Image (tube, rainbow, N blue to C red):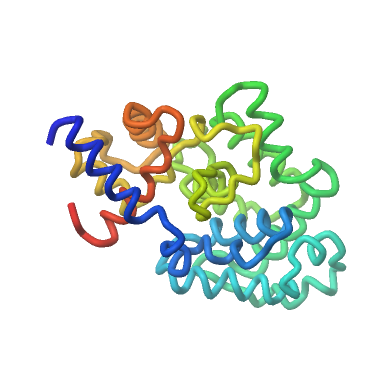
Length: 255
């Protein structure tokens, strides 16, 4: 398949999968239940952080968390007392346990009350470097600046450790991209879609290798840079739109 044919395939599959019909069966459906900016951010963050495993279970777990927060996550998190957090000690999603959950709530509260919110943390670092790589590192530093168990650190990856950072890149895609199709939210205006990195998981990685877009065999940060660079050749302004195509092709075994 030559470059032109490959671009045509990716565009076709983006048009097929990058629609509102995609929402119901995807974790992005969880933040779509909200309208307030901060609620969308928090619901989206938890849905992305829990996004490993089967999608129905991810949606159930993230939705349960929102219900435990009275379906008003920003108001709940910024006002919660220590006693209010007790029920979250029993929450479990794969390796994300109750202690992780309570810490994440406390950390998010710290970010909104002391750092002006998640958007500000990412945007301020991005403006300094014009690159989201250091912004990912800065966000992780801020996230773990309050007291926590070291075990919780495994849930926020870092490019400094050559991690693909799939879940945070997915969250950023949701917050930054706005193609007018109503799937991604486009809430954050000061980070251009051209600077996003592709969320790389098993499906997108395998599909990308089969299509010749990715030569690195491991799903690590170097692979994220390689894949995103290839996708920028097809659409420099919005390379991560092809995440829809790669993911859809992967889960439907159409390559």
